[in-house]
Amino acid sequence: MSNEKRYRIACLTGAGISAESGIATFRGMNGMWENHSIEEVATPGGFARNPLLVWKFYEARRRQALTCQPNKGHIGLAKLQQVVGEENFCLTTQNVDGLHQKAGTKNVLELHGSLWRVRCVKCGQEREERGLFDELPPKCPCGGMLRPAIVWFGEMLPGEIFESAGRAATECDLYIVVGTSGVVEPAASLARVAADRGARVWEVNPDETPLTRMCERSWRKPAGEVMGEVAEEAVKRAAMKSEWRLI
Ligand code: BV8
Ligand code: ZN
Image: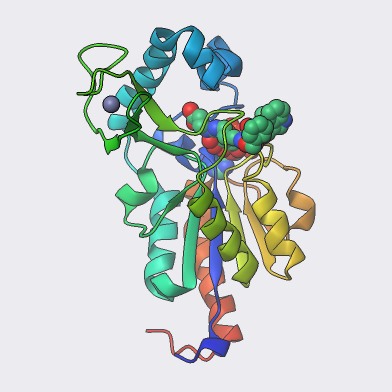
């Protein structure tokens, strides 16, 4: 397929896309942060002050996330990637639950890290860890303490991943924002980058957000209910704008 006729789709997802899988959002009614302050459990300072409290918070989230399955929102985006081709689709997520990968989406950009990776504060070694820990805080073989490989507030995002997410936003023709309150930076700025570079922006969120005003279309519904329709509309737009013979 010749390059100039490609129609590129990029997505940014937040906690809302996992809500129908049973994972509480951050700022929703039953937001998990209610009984914890962000300062206490999602900052390096909080971890330094009380690593056990932070690990109890994250181990509870890991335990719960282990029982969760992707919902039709995740599955709809994985199917969209299959139809348009991996080279024409890039999904960036703020979520750490791994449900996009479980739904089959390839090359997911995890801006804020993952519940399923840990890093040693002493030797820096990072590894995948899908099981639950017997003792908290868990230890690295080197004797150092392990931390969740998650980007906490006040921490830099992984440079390469954020750059790839920025490139996808810059180069895409359509940017679909799903299930994010558009509050946390620099993730939320990606939708503005896309809009500034001339991409159409679509939003899937039961509520309005600070990103709504830049959207060409908004679906005020839960992602699980409308993602099939959104994906169909995106494929139609792509077919119209390029020479695809859709299979
Ligand atoms: C950084 C990992 C540079 C944790 C997360 C002052 C001092 C220092 C920094 C700042 C500051 N002011 C601002 C900042 C920047 C700060 C920030 O943005 N703060 C916010 C609170 C204002 N950002 C940072 O610190 C970032 N780093 O800036 O580095 C730097 C370095 C040093 C010093 C200064 C600057 C790091 C940010 C990353 C933090 N880590 N996650 C964890 O997950 O355990 S962020 C956390 O919030 C999650 O990743 C989450 O995804 C993200 C964003 O929230 P949302 O995903 O949008 O979730 P939310 O609940 O808010 O919204 C859900 C939405 O879904 C709602 O709109 C709802 O309507 C909708 N919804 C609900 N159900 C559904 C649905 N939609 C569709 N379908 C449904 N069924
Ligand atoms: Zn170590």
